[in-house]
Length: 79
Image (cartoon, rainbow, N blue to C red; front, top):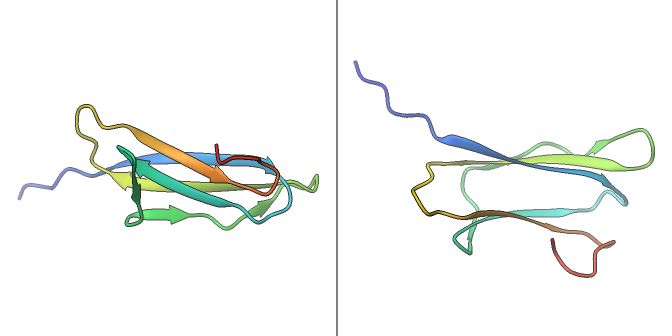
């Protein structure tokens, strides 16, 4: 039997933020990806800051551009 190729997993690690509320989005070629996005719970670091890991399962094609965007109250603009 033949197995289907496994999708790649892209990781976005966001660390050292406070307060805990954060929004992380994945984009492919400027379009938001909402399916196949998996996030850990927000984890407390022990120094009053937090971290989260957001994963995107995808099958990149040549020329695709992926962007992880973070929105947080401490930022004037998303990064």
